[in-house]
Length: 159
Image (cartoon, rainbow, N blue to C red; front, side):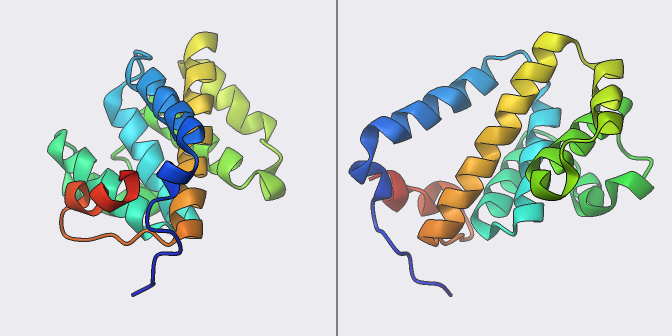
């Protein structure tokens, strides 16, 4: 188990933390499908190797009615028939932006996104992808530990 590097990082940077929480609330209020949001948060966290966020978002997705099979198959979504066209486009865009140094956000992923999302949805989805990447970097950088119940585990982080 890794030792947390800071016990209360959000107390040390409260305005930054509040800005991140505001971005999260904007995502919740965006009108984007909750399933799509939880899938991209989980998958981006998988790509980044963020155990804390994988645990949090798989737990949240299951509570929201997502199936264990779809979560299990998420790393292989391209080879699976379990995902809708919108989910596939969002996952492709999430991968492209998460790996942007390698992908440079390819036109093919952009075109797939435009085929099933309107411009406002694309903008909101892109902010959501950016946000989960920031959360992953915070959790990995500060060594947040996951546990059996993420609501208990996050209490020390926000304190």
